[in-house]
Length: 260
Image (tube, rainbow, N blue to C red; front, side, top):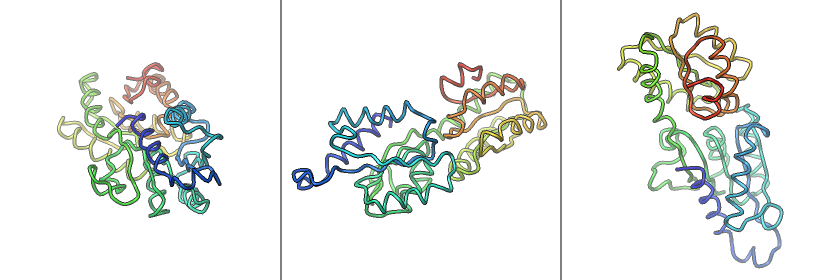
């Protein structure tokens, strides 16, 4: 599903809040917004979130309250942030990114959770079924992991002489890293390529990553779909150009900065 579908699910949850509470107007419904991103990482996403709610008649500061919790790309903070939202008795939790959604699910079995993830929500343990999520968790997925093998194939087509490729993952996002590593490894093996995984959990690791890629003599780099890399896609593209490493990642910003 696309981001707009995610907003529709949130708005639908808001519409189901008790009619008595709205009639009495004792307090505005509260949405807990939980993400692993930094507060300044994706202003466009926040704007789209608010716009989607407004299209359904829910305006922040007028008839709803939004409690924001940002992990600042430090995943260890997410359980505490999720617990704080539960403690504040929010009416629903909107969790963007897989780590945030998993933290929210671990924090409550009663407050409705609406997630947005790039992974298969069944495989990472968010829901038991796509058709019948069950419990208090539902949401939308972009199924980005399905693109990983295709990225390996495209990179191989663009650099046919490369016999070694690497995949960049964020080990702090262990669920996504494991899934994408398996998918990329299988695709590389099918194409007869030597495959390596390189890790970066902060922006400070990027220079080291490209040094490691050069040492491996990798002819190309696939960058896994992860919020840290999305936030710094322009820097990663610039490093790929500077180091002469063909690299592939989704997103217009990455391509505009010189990446595939």
